[in-house]
Image: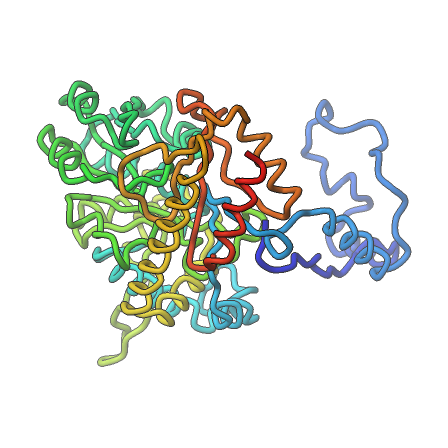
Length: 464
């Protein structure tokens, strides 16, 4: 899905024989095969690849690629109520204007010789994000929320010096798979059940599983299923009572109207920046963040870069630079670092900073209130349809679970019929959460008008 057209990126080919030979001569090689001499013979493809005939020009290639892309069904042409980790929000034009600047798009390492203000822009992002989550330290963005959650959990376990993790049972299965990939077998992951009526964490199950082995309790607010975790304070208190760290995942756009995790006991906060001025980009607009207080026991556990203001050798002169650089895998510690960090999504951090600076506290409150009002209206109207109900009784922010089990139709059938009407229906939960039956999770944000919601409800009424 995308709210704007996807464009094939132009490229400069180096396949002209004369150019290829010049490059090989510069490298001191006779053939491309020598370039890959270290690749083991047993994994080299011996057959010819099944590739179409080469295009004669860049124009022909571009025309072909754009024809393939037109087969996609996008949010530009359809009304969208899908969320589940990649949400459609309004993107102010200034966000695209700034993140499209060459000095940001092309900078990778961002060192002094190719910086052009990237250090400062990331410092400004971290400062704005810290204010939003009411924390003091924010990292340069990770790849996505899943990576941020996995890293935050590992950080929390190192702080607690324990290896057991209790996670909410409402977590996105794809996110859980990433967390397992990062954390197992070093850490023991234990799932805590959710209450069937509320969708919140089952406190009795949580308390029965807490012990002196528990290093981290992880939950999300709002949860993956959309509900607000109204027992957040009790969860954090229970975790702290056994000496565990409380790690909370959060949708940052909710924080204009919902209490920040630190207010109910979170030690580490993580989430995804995608709602903050970043297009969905076919699922590619993800960017994870982590935040803590300015305490060395947390700061020194961050594996990724932290930018701050520091003194220079010139009295009275200051600069933007790395904080505690030696703790990282790319600093002096190398393989002895606590965790490896690869490529990150710093460009989206800059974009989120632009969004937050543009919106300000009042703007974040207004967008949060608009989302909640729109979502409440949509849920009320959908629940008025015959044999349809809202699955959980707990308050929600922008996503809510609709139960179609009594309609005699599957979510798959309903969504197919909606797509025929130019509407993306809610996320089908029947495979990932079979205990819920035929349920779908609908997402409503500030981009949805009353007419959009009424169109959805009318379409559902006709289908059911």
